[in-house]
Image 1 (cartoon, rainbow, N blue to C red):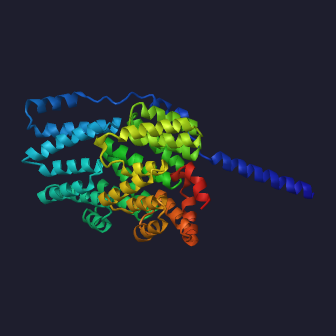
Image 2: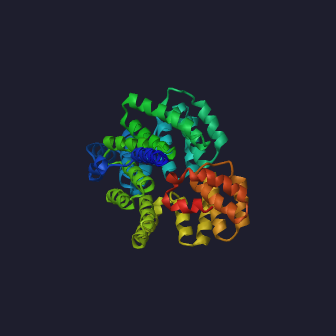
Image 3: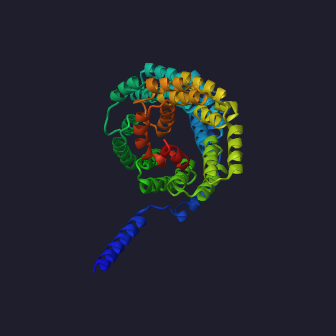
Length: 426
């Protein structure tokens, strides 16, 4: 009788385990294979040719300058080629110089171009000038929120956020979501991003629908809602089959959630054939390291290094370059670059890179001082907190290490498999 009872308990346990295993989400190549085969973006269009011809006939064609800049920006997003972002800058600077009407709009567009280039202080000057023009006040206030967030001026950013309050406005909702994410309240951030997503669907505006889909997908991933994240990346690809960001999101799910490095590399290779953005090579290098392919990792890192050597990128890849230099044990250069990044953008994330650079230079006390003054309780970014935990460990503060380890264990998906052993060994 006892033996029968234990057999029944064992069978029930196996059934429960089987049910749990069935619930583990897995991607399906049939969902996305056809998107991987999509054609590269064409870097010309009938609209571009029309607008460009007007500029050539009359260099003061303001509307054409703005439209051509928009096309250049689209080409940059689609190809990762920095020359298009710089060409957009030139068109917008010309428009700002000659505009007699609508100048604030061109100032805002140029400021956003500078944000993309990580020229944040220049962007702030332009945003302030746009606000002083007096037209498009809400758009200028929204832009000022964005720039102050990038610069780490959080009190000023919150003031501008309050000034544009409108719970039915897409722009306000996405910024409210960003603010709550910054404060570490992911659930609230998701709630507001979902509202923004609903507004985008109602508007039928493809750009808003696409943007909200990929950003909400990111939030779902951070919250461990992997299947929801995956579905939204697929939805984004249905709207834009060339969207490299959504494909990268799926590659991350395959890599970090499913631990299938080979398939993740296949997806990344399909992206890189059409979009040469340097950060894609960094992810390829990480996945190659995960599967133990050292030669492929070094090849990807070499490709990254060659691309960011283009002076057009300016300060855009400082944070990535600091990690790259530390990984290559070029710690002196990493420290100098981290100091420059703090000067350009004094955020907790920048100070985190500076602190970690000091640690790698053997100055653990200086690293700890920076963590205590500029990072602790000021950011919830897992990558920065992982480095902070390492700094606390080196300085013997095991209580802080224990506290951070508990938090970081829940962020392994976001950090990736290579960080798992580092976190578990804290």
